[in-house]
Length: 92
Image (cartoon, rainbow, N blue to C red; front, side, top):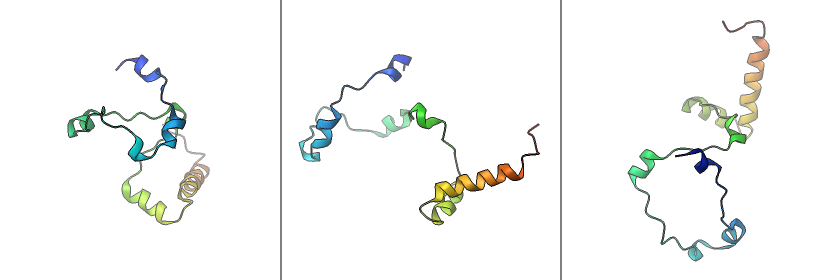
């Protein structure tokens, strides 16, 4: 994959596609997705969102989600409180 592949702009008419029902969309030229495809697939995250990605253990994420719909704000609050309580410590 080249750098040009990442900077190509889509020529899809998204408004027209959004107006179509699933039955109206012609999928005949799209090959089926195989296990091999997914083994080689690469996740692309828009640069504007990439700076906010973190990996949480599933049980940690499940606990925060169980606290309610505002779980992302709660995670942020917990992390902020940790920073405030540990400002005097510096990474060595």
